Image (cartoon, rainbow, N blue to C red; front, side, top):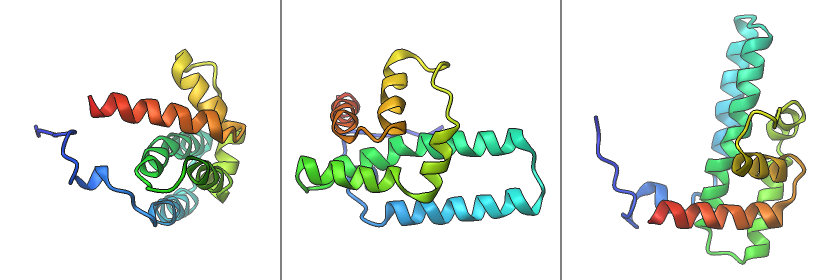
Length: 130
C-alpha cells in the first residue's frame, strides 16, 4: 500500500513535462517492438491501441500544467493526437463501451476537437485538485 497526496503542488505529477510525448512515444516504440518480436495476435494489438488512446488522459493533464495560453495548449494537444501512435490507435477505438463522460472525452480526442477536449481536461484537473 502507499499514500498518494494529490494536493502537493511540488509533486512530480503536478508539474509540466515538456518531453512527455517523446518519452511516451519511445515507450510505445519499445512495446511495439516486443509485440512484433513475440508475434502477438490481434488481442494484444487491440489492448496496445487502447492503452495508447488512454495515454491521452495523462498527456492532456500534463499539458494542463503548461503555463502557456489556452490556445497553445489546444495546439499542443493537436500535436499529441497527430502523433504516429495516436493517429493509428484512435482509428480503431470503440467508443460504445465507455460511460458518457469518457465517451465525450475520447470522441473529442478521436476527432481532434481540441478546444472542448482542453475544457474537459481543465474540469478533470479541478476534480483531481479537490
